[in-house]
Image 1 (cartoon, rainbow, N blue to C red):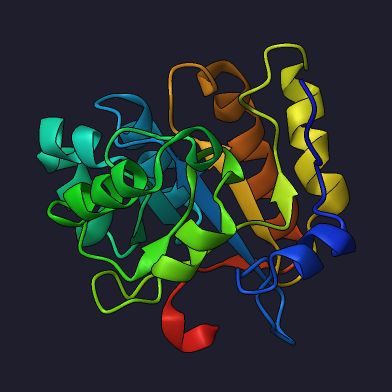
Image 2: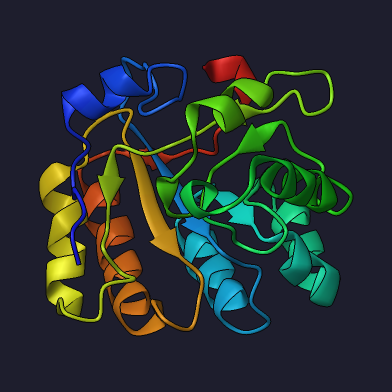
Length: 211
């Protein structure tokens, strides 16, 4: 499985219209969680975040929100941010433009947000250009560091180390509140929260007014 743990500068340049990092002079890290809400795993994540008074951004699948609205409501009620992650987790590179954009719009019926993250980080330039249209008015949020929790070939310790070694002030970090990632995420997240909190970092959600 090929992916960059830390996003290289050339990729940020290639997709410069996307947000890859938050400019800040403070010790702030921006945790994000993709593919939820999940009826069990998302609640475990929320419980863990609460221990550190940490805020995060949850990029939700519209279909999952429709199935688990009470979990989605808890995310919002506890002060976290949400983002659109399409309705059915579509890969933009492999999906017809109209189908892809219609799927984003379908998710918007359930997810009230001006943030968007493409599943797998795969989106065409045309699809990306349409996000700014009045139909959507979405800001594309990518990431600085991938935990790799979705990768079954790495250990839970490696997942933790990916974040601890590479995250710095302003980093957008990706975890997943999904069954596939759960074993690695559920170990790495508490370790990451503990490590950076001890160093004086706080964890904030992403909003358009800080971009």
